Length: 498
Image 1: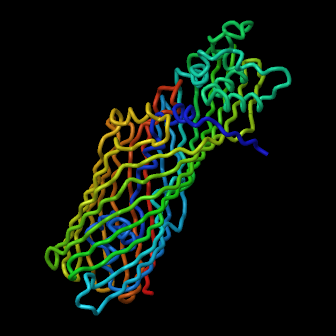
Image 2: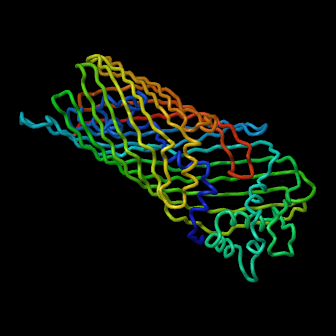
Image 3: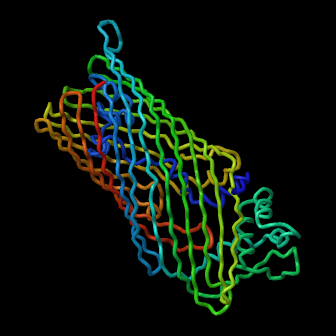
């Protein structure tokens, strides 16, 4: 049974998430939902009449004419091409989910004095992100992972890294996590695995260390496996005024479960010192949160519609768990295996995502089709860690992040009972240095068939692409891996009356 250890979260966060990777993950949603919605790249802010459109603009539920329910299945495939040093790798992954389900209930009134001629209430679940992904990186490097451990060790007294008589690896690893922090735990792993030695091993007050890795060129393999998803439960209310104005409100409950496993292997051909290093980490992050949306749609004319939505920040609580192990083999073929067999559990912390504004317009060509355009604005520099002790991270936000704009355009053309659809979208990078995390852009196609006014079957294909630059570790290895990520989504939805 793996031991569980409660640790000091601040030291962990400053060491492991100083690149704000988690913060961006919490704050970014991908286009997903019903097949009709995704086939038009999510350009539905001024249209409504779709369960996923209700999640974008809560006024969209009031556009429904009668009770409807939709459920959707999604197949996602990922293809990641990586360049690192002189190495090239290609890794594929796929997942299959029930990514959306929801219903809207419509109530009309015959009271001519009522403000709302029609009221609607909706409830839905929608997956906002699918984290299932694998990235493999291979290449040669002049830097070793030994620098990661050495950087944490410098300045740490040797006395903290040497077990007292009868003290096990687990016990010392636990003590360092409880009493000192994450960085000293990493130093201990490196010391126990003989990656470095003290400059003066006879002085327990020694704070300087020297590496036992003597090579200048290294072959490195890095496998990143990500699993999990993020989703929101939507509770909606909407109303129609004068058959021209639609208003709505959403109260959203957010949940996510993300697991990240990294398997790192390093090799060198030196005749002395450490030749092989294997370093494995598994990080699991869970979040729960709340947000609200207010939205409206107006029919300027019988054909032209405009819409606007305000989405509040998501106030969330985040919890992290981490387990680690390391193995080394030296030139004499002697091995050292360090597995504390400890699950580090860090105290929950608070985080706030940025708010978002969405403006949209659409033109409906009677019964033959429509075209729609959405513009969304989000300022990522307004992300904020709300727990005490994160002041240094929050101070960096405006230096690293900027506002991001998302454009979406979609269209639909109807032929008898068939509907042909397409769309395009571009989501700008939230980073000022866009090479770190490039724009996400893509297109979508789809087809739908209406059996009658209440029942339809829809299919969509959406393709998106993004370039990014990843650091393997936040200290010790500065060389970045260049990643070209390609995502394909296939969605099948069934809509029927209730």
